[in-house]
Image (cartoon, rainbow, N blue to C red; front, side):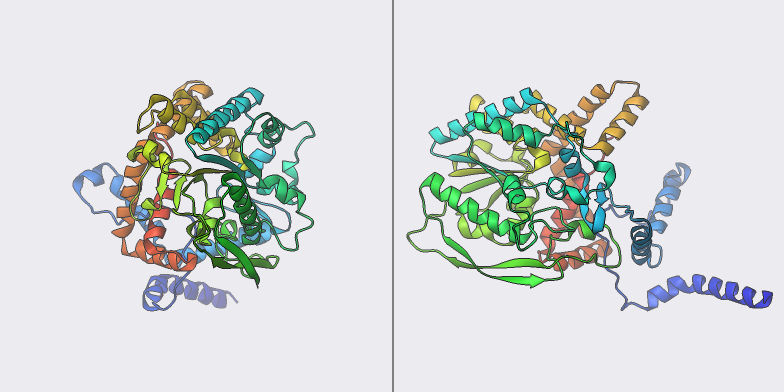
Length: 486
């Protein structure tokens, strides 16, 4: 028996030794690349200086760790075991709810009121927004505010029990709904619409393992937006009608974006999803307005379904009121590099899409930017203290971020408020100046690494987008998620 055991151990040892050779020879085995982005470590070159400073050893260890044979598959296997046996995940800020429903922490924080800004702050923001809308109206432009649904508020029944909301909870959304009646702001509230139709809808309005509205839910929203714009501008937009819905058990991008980030082997079982098929018609009687959209990733569902391309005369999108699209698809561009006033003046409609957890900073700083440009009669904007405050609110909305702030404050022997201001000012500087340089750095890093490029091309094909767009998305993600080094 002992001899048999020794033979088994010896055989396993031999197999382990030959794993690198096996992996090299079996080139036809291709593993699905991991979702999410991480900066790849290049193999370091040895010289006397980096050897003496130990940087060579540190980089080499990291390089070896990233190139362990079958690493991608092993990571997915580990994540699968954690998910299947312990209902846990290694994915940052993703929460596994009941029956496999997935959430992002920011939306849970908004549902629990952890980002609550108070009545005076909300009134101040709404007053500024109303004033900006009136200014635009005097210039022949219209401003529209679109509130998109938050998943935690839509599906509270699937949240883990530890996230039970107290009866006296105050949230920015409830505060917004109460105060918005005092202001004449053009608003469509899809949070309310989705909740009102949650039990009436024949198809999921928000996917089980996605963070955004489903394509079916979005199609209902698009119809309402079209009618609202037509009434607001007294125009007739091109006809965009749904001729059919295609059912699918396999979710299309990005209806499974949170599920992908788990990096597990199996696909989490989904309710049947429905995808609209559009008929499009435009004639001389139709008007296509120029529209500038300010918002977050909810816009990409619209873009991927070619909604703005069909309805509007242009496709202008300022991601988080910072990155400028479609220009940034080919080369990163931020609003600090453009003539903001000129671009705003070209538009017929300013469309602000805001999520529930973004209500603490309506427009992601755009209101401050536009008011600054208008009031100072300049082409470019000058950041104000209010903009720094908006970044502080963004940090406060993240429990993990605040823990990191508390740690850094303790290490620096300063107050949490002081550290908050330091990080907020750093973010402001990065997002409005240095961020573009960091994005360019990572774009070049990706393009110079053949293995990284191969993974990018595979992800681009999977997401049905161009390789250049995928490079930019990954480079932007890395740059935006770098931690401030204080």
